[in-house]
Image (tube, rainbow, N blue to C red; front, side, top):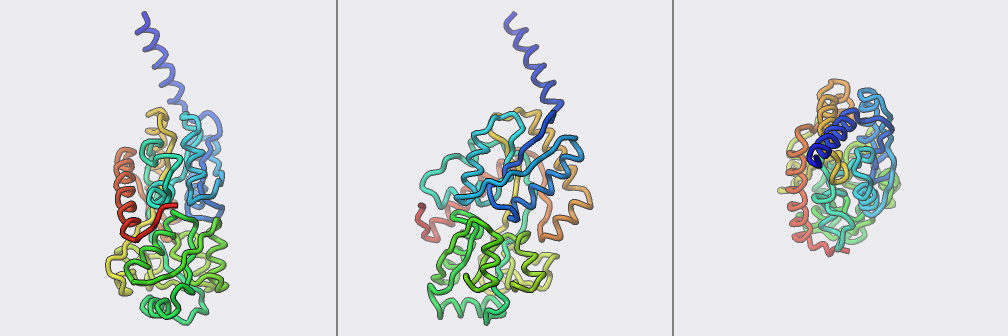
Length: 317
């Protein structure tokens, strides 16, 4: 009898989650408005709302390289109504830069799908007297710690990218963390900081306006949005490769029916020409695939960036 009751309740729960969503869904963005995860979350949320008939609302909870917002998501009810737009910083690199983490990127989340990948873009102020990466490196060697690089916070992709450049080019650039990526890029334009290796989506408006000039992208190949900008390898920094990624996660324990439905819908969105064009305009490429594939990818990224952190001499704070 108990087994029968359990089976009936299980079928009822499956049926209920099969109707998901029946109310507003919150996508936590663990960074400020205008950041790349924010751009991704709002674009995807709009499409999901159209397809599933319920609002998908982005909520910015920035700080600690994405840890504050991600921790909030990890500790939310595992019912599919709180998600998080995680990224390479919040769900991989933070493990290399913080002594203790309030959450495990692998154990405390149910991966949903890889949404997009993009290069980091090395940019400097238009007025800086360098025109390429080799000149920038020579300038940085001459100026030493007077040369600074901005980031979106300790443990962010822009932080590790700057430290990686220090390591490979033998530089001593000083790290200046920001909570607001847009403010960081504005300060690059104003000369308050020398450079930033930011995700492409928030950097593109500053490039198009001419306030900042792009020197290199960090992927193995050039990107269609900036075809004349060389890769870091082409620019003379051999071995420098960083692909920034963004993906949707749910709290661990979220029903498989919810994960499967979201994965199916988002895979369909990522294949539409309009959404692909929207990503391309930001210098990004669509992701996709299964939830399991995304989970394996994240675990590999954690291992990789912990190793890079150690090799770069980063002391976890």
